[in-house]
Length: 287
Picture 1 (cartoon, rainbow, N blue to C red):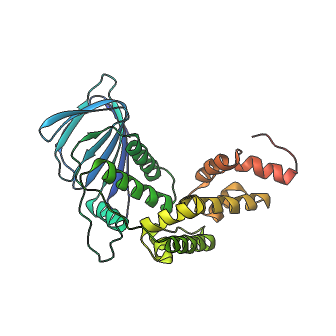
Picture 2: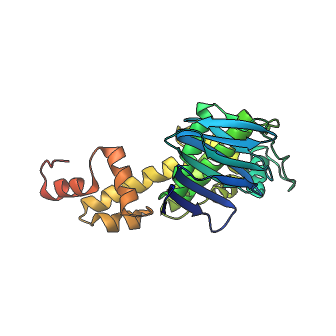
Picture 3: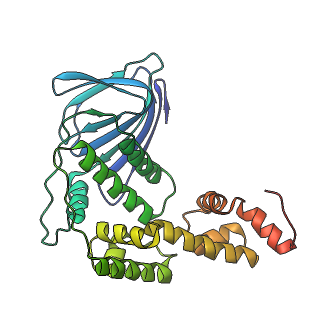
């Protein structure tokens, strides 16, 4: 949505309290307000100034903003060019669930909520984690990848920016191998289905965080990356059999043809259409 002060794009998860916004403002001034969950923002361009906890703060390009629940703040441009930023709002229940899972809690008790002392942080790891999560929320993405990035962003913020960091329980070597192999067996069988991190955890017999770490340690890929690899292989076979790219994408489990096309080119260096034509003609084709 374009406005006289710039433009705004907004996204909301229909099943849980997670929202994301991407905006570029010039003259817009936020009135003092607060959110009922955590809010994490990345300033991409320019700078923004805001008052929070009785002091003024400025977030420039590459910096991360962290607001605790019910923390009052305002906001406005601090540069002539305005500011472009991405922000993610995550409900307290989602944050507690991620931290409890990472800690291996099995008794249903919620994890202690993290508290962020500094409203502005300069940390490339946090910036990258939040950027990856934001991209998966507002663009085409598989559910498994979205859950992995959500957990990664919450854990990165809690570990690197909060006063209370989660403590995880490590699996034994044998337990790690069993968990990873059970998760891989489920992915091998149902890679085209919309599997969740919870589905993998149930199959592996451990927490979502534990199965993610076990899988990456054992196979060098995250579960969502392995799932995408299987989908690409399936789609590639369908293309070679003459199936149109749109149908191959749907059959293999991709969100849409554009999503499939981007990942196919990243993996193989050519588009699905170029590959299909070359196979069907039995000759080289230009990309």
